[in-house]
Length: 339
Length: 237
View: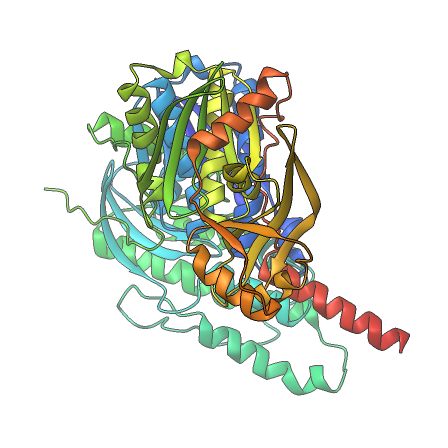
């Protein structure tokens, strides 16, 4: 079955063709980084306007690159839940119009469910059940993936998302936007033990994260130097800050996997592209006889291929939406206990 | 040519169907904040009521704005996808022009007005009809009602929903009580009819490039531009 996926939940306009939920024929992602860079973050109204301009081109290119036409599409899957409302609705308006016209099923997908499927799409050998850690600019979430579309929410962040902390630190020290790749790059030249920043909630048994305090601690440590115009050891700060985040993410994900009695961990979302995170996860899992899986880099950040894969799985379970599909900007991932 | 017109710039899904100059259907479904949820269902309803399918439609017209930013994004995206999927042409119509068209038999200057959100701001423009043709005079206006009143220097007909409120404010400013009004909401059939006139002459928009007519920049960008101007002014001063 050929599924057209559409994703516009934040600042990436994306369309993809995925065959049988496994083979990515095309995955076109138009990012808007340049438009938002000067604001140091995503501006919702600017994102929504750009999606409206790009959506047609991106869908057309996904079909071209996949070597198919609109008539070959057998279902349309779209991110309808979780994201910026103005951005989401552009994708949903496009998807429901195409579904109506082509008379094929329409599936509204939760954005986080897409990220969960990015791990499975990239790693067909990833076993079920597993624990999925989704880390991005908007999310830090631990989910026990019991089976296809059967999730148990283990915990999430109580304040900032991990990627958001990267962005805010990068913005404060004027390193660039988005913060993740910038800090990842800078950190390779720094000493990660130069400063010991706090590891919030590291020892707490609950699967919750907090990155707001860490961000404030880093900023406070250098406020006076910054005000007096002193040259800061930016590479050391970046490396030490990143180490604190990585330490928390890896420790908590390993503990969650143990609690759930699974040995496989899938790490997804934009921050899963972070090199130090991959390095520490791999080393820790090797030591503790567990296995960790990361998506291909093209499936880490927001993309429509993962939405198409999730849509296909929902359809296989007989779940589709009707023409009244609307966007829901803020809703937890459905919690469906298996068995 | 059978043309389907769609406008979602206000609080309704306005959907119309014309065959050249003949209006086959003209519906306005009140939707409030369910514009997106209802739009394809309403399009389908209008087509079914007329015993038609999408394959019978020869072209599309869509209200580009100005109006609700969210609303015009829905309409433009739906219109764009309908045209893309059917391979039929599309023409975007300014909502102010569609509103002005309601006063096409009037000899005077026509001033359509559309609310621009909280704070009493409006979108407006001036049009004149001569020999059956519409002429847009001057620029689009975005601002408050007294500012709009100051632009009025000759007899004018106001076209709007809740037009009495605008008339009272304008009369007060101009110290005049002789301004004519027409109470009208945006019609999908008018959007279709205006689009049909263009499409029948082979004038259509680039389907994939079609974009809303906002008239106002996003607040973030406006803020940055204002800041830049201040900096420039300080540097020059």
